[in-house]
Amino acid sequence: MYSFSCPRCDQLVFFENTECLRCGQALGFGPDQLTMVSFVEGGGPRHCANQALAACNWLVDTASGGPSQLCRSCQLTRTRPADGDLAALSAFADAESAKRRVVFQLLDLHLPLTSWADRPGGLGYDLLSSNGTRVVTGHLDGIVTIDLAESDDPHREQIRQEMGEPYRTMLGHLRHETGHYYWSVLVEQVGRLDEFRALFGDEQADYGAALTRHYNEGPPAGWADRHVSAYATMHPWEDWAETFAHYLHIRDTLQTAAAFGMRIDVPDIPLSAEPAVQVDHEPFESILADWLPLTYALNAVNRSMGRDDLYPFVLSPSVVEKLTWVHQTVAEPVPQPAG
Ligand SMILES: [Zn+2]
Ligand SMILES: [Zn+2]
Ligand SMILES: [Zn+2]
Image 1 (tube, rainbow, N blue to C red):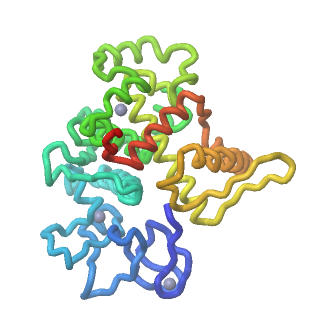
Image 2 (cartoon, rainbow, N blue to C red):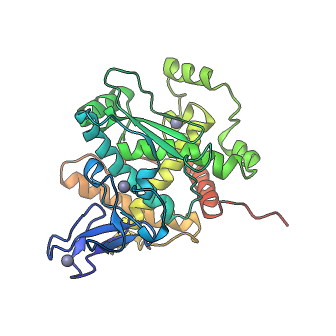
Image 3 (cartoon, rainbow, N blue to C red):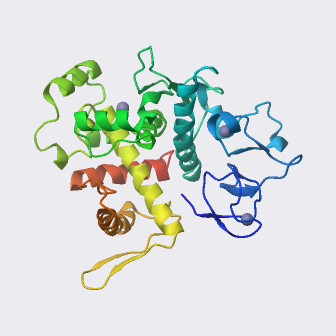
């Protein structure tokens, strides 16, 4: 994420702000410009129709002439809780807030993005309450389903502990499930299946059998040598989704650190990092060279506050190889013909 300033008084403002806390200027996020812009009543872009319902601060460009009253992020939501379901709507607002970060990043990375509303198989989100009905978080044919109960901190923490996971967040869920959509866009549809299978395994393996095996037997011993998480061992599709989500974690966190001018320079040991805001054309190797020192420092900062590590992961060489390939597919969404 970038750092933003008020267009009127230069005060630091955040991605979620609807006004400047210093000068009172009404603000909104402009998805076309990818920055915070001044909002003027009665002219120019208007606020998204979900402003009250989902605390959405994105703007809708009236000049584009589209019929939608919803912003680019909210348009991607196909199903949401009913108007009267106040508890679910509160969780929905939290999920939409995390989703705006995902959509921002997809736009910032220039990833191909077709909405479910424009084409079958396009990206869409069903954000559903599991209160009274069964909702399984997952992805099918472009549609991401999220169980809004995951917005509830005690509930999510309980599941995290039961599953023995080091990290579980709504943002992480959204990145993982969105990653399944990008498997079809960046791998399947553009003829990268052979390369994919060489690194991640054959995705034609029976998914149902893999799921049953994973929940009965757990991950294989030594899984961390080849996988970014225990869940990634379940099936090559899950390995991709976990690795893709992890890639988005790295890119976003590194970009935020760069946007705030963070530098790592430890005098007594050779540990330094000078992250940049835009690294689209950098090799993944140099992204990683900035990332690792930053994570050591941020983990140490968290420990000083008595918190768990910000980044509770270790990247094996095999995982780095997969992340490097994900970076290539993102940097070059349509591969160049060989020769
Ligand atoms: Zn201001
Ligand atoms: Zn919106
Ligand atoms: Zn998955």
